[in-house]
Image 1 (spheres, rainbow, N blue to C red):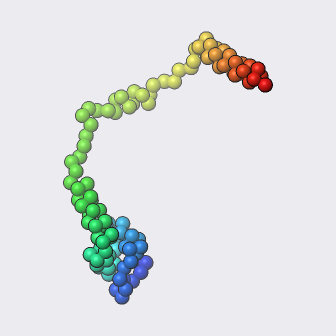
Image 2: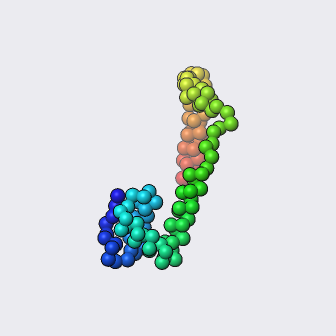
Image 3: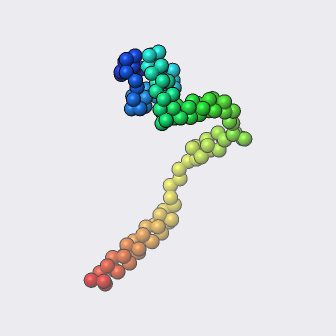
Length: 115
């Protein structure tokens, strides 16, 4: 709980409201801070609609249906995780190395001829 300022004597600013907003939504503020935040929200053209939107969002999210995949996905995930890693065939590896070497040689040759 984060209640940095005593709001029983002074009104809450927008910055102070922003500082307590998360705790307010979680109902984790003292009564004086809650009252000051509510009072500020009622009188502020920026913070009031923000608080209303966040409260509506919270209610809408709480009322969402639980979603479940249309089929069991775990078997496919497990299959991909447990697929063994296979070493490259030496002929394939050698061919790949030769292709890379010839590309490097052509690149080097083009640089040398452009000088």
